[in-house]
Length: 176
Image (cartoon, rainbow, N blue to C red; front, side, top):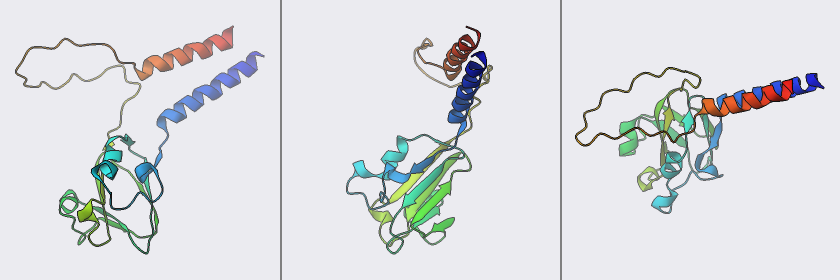
């Protein structure tokens, strides 16, 4: 019986570790055929991207009609001006998957004439790698701030604390 508990505990711990480190695929706009001219600012893909958290290793997936559209990865300057003349990459297959391989901003515009100017574009920001299990953090950079000092608060829940609870539960299962 104890060996079953130990096996179950090991499997659960492995699952938790993998679920925190696994790269994910994001369907652009969270729905099929979202790569289109938005009908309003609320339908802008940038609103969707702002609400998402992208990590290094994640991928963006577009589904669109390749006979009518394409996806261009561009520089920030070309994104702002909707220039299609010198893209970083061109995707025309209708089922495009782009791996987010670094932290920072990624810029995408429609390759169909006039679509970018009408709002069919996307910027995503990939978060830098976190040291999840680091016990020491570097001191924050000094910031010039004119105003009263604000006392620190402690209301957040840490990942380490949650993992320690799960670990304690698993140890309890094994030994009791």
